[in-house]
Amino acid sequence: MIGLRRIRFDTPCTIEVEHSDRQLCAHVELAGGVSIGPGDTVHVHGAPISLGFGERRVIERMATVERASTLGRLWTKFAGHFEMTELWEVSFTDEAMP
Image 1: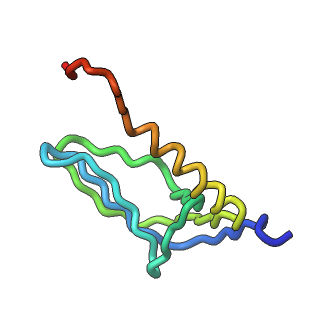
Image 2: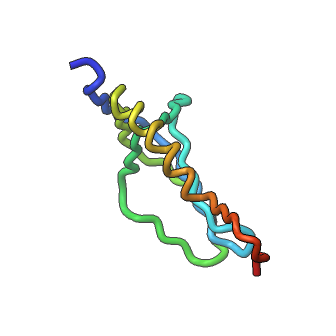
């Protein structure tokens, strides 16, 4: 059926991880300029990465990208609009905020 198929493929990726007093971050860049859209998933293969304080590592690994089906992509966009409202807090009382 059209719109229900998911495409899956493997691609190399670069993982940059840092644990310092400046930042605690992890970034994954997929090789070949692969872009990720709503509903797509990425699974990076390999053992968990553990860093001590003050360390920074750049690691090459493989990742599996699973594209969302057309229906899944539309559902993710639709549901995302409602989840966004959870970030907003609106009050119409005359009391001042603490």
